[in-house]
Image (cartoon, rainbow, N blue to C red; front, side, top):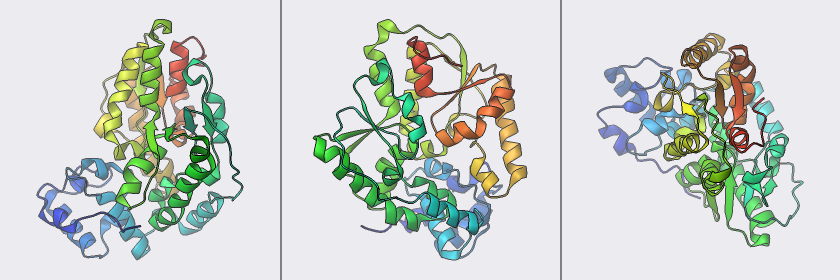
Amino acid sequence: MDGLKYDPEICAKCETFDCLVRCQYMDLDLENARKERQRILAGEDSRVLAECATCYACEEYCPYGNHPFYLIVDRQEELGTWPVPIPLTNQQVKMMGPRGQIVPQKVHAPVINMCFFPMLLGFIRGKLFEGASAIAGSDIFCNIMWLHFAKNSVIRERLPQMIDNIQNYYLKESGVNELICFHDECYGAFTHLAPAFGIEVPFKSTHLFEYLTKRLTELKSEIHPINEKVAYQRPCSNRLIPEAQHWVDDIFQLIGVDRVDREYDRENALCCGMLIRAMQRDDLADDIQKRNLDDMEAAGAKYCVFNCPACFFTMKELVTERGITPILMSELCQVALGEGTGW
């Protein structure tokens, strides 16, 4: 395993510093961004390390694919600038650790990876997932969440083992070489983070939304257009894989919903606020949640569509209070096929 695939010369020559200037949680002009970036490159303390909301957006904003956010997380850990209080971080690291309870299991394609969320296995049902196998549990947890906790060391330690577990306990034994990732987190971990950290992934990863697009196209004659306005809550991990964004629009077109135009969407998306609240920055969390919800309500959204379970569990009551129905993308597709309730 190699170190982080990061070229300091690229950052040193950058003239825009989009990774910092475009940040929605820090106020940095071009000159201050240049100074703070130089401190980070030199391994020195920087206000960026303390003020970073760990939203991943600078990974998307960097025009060179040079992994500025991963470097920030490395520096936070090296200097002990913990975004989340260390007792809570240590508790989470222990609680989310592998249990060593995984046993070989025969699966058949398509194999849907639910990661650490066995409580969502019930969503793998109906025509969309006909004939699918689903896997879940702490021993196949992608561990990408440690980016929020300045714990790249945990990712480097655990992610290779989780990949081996998926390959050796499920896929290899069953002659399957493709994993459908139900969450952006897993797809981002396998296709973006792992290569950046020099971690090999021996199987093909497919995003849930690509899979849904294919299945909905196959079932097109059975779709009943929903004809409602929807807001999409873009998760942090999708910043690592912006190429997956077009599938959101493709799915919405197939099922007949209108993705409302609003200020806090696409590259300008705001996070759900859960980790910011864990950082004990309640004023900031309250502010971004209010702006986000006001934006959805003003746009007339009937549904708020989620992919990330953490975003869903954080915001579902908040959007419901605004008269907006929270729903996972797969469930919205099932509504269009006459199989979901849509609440």
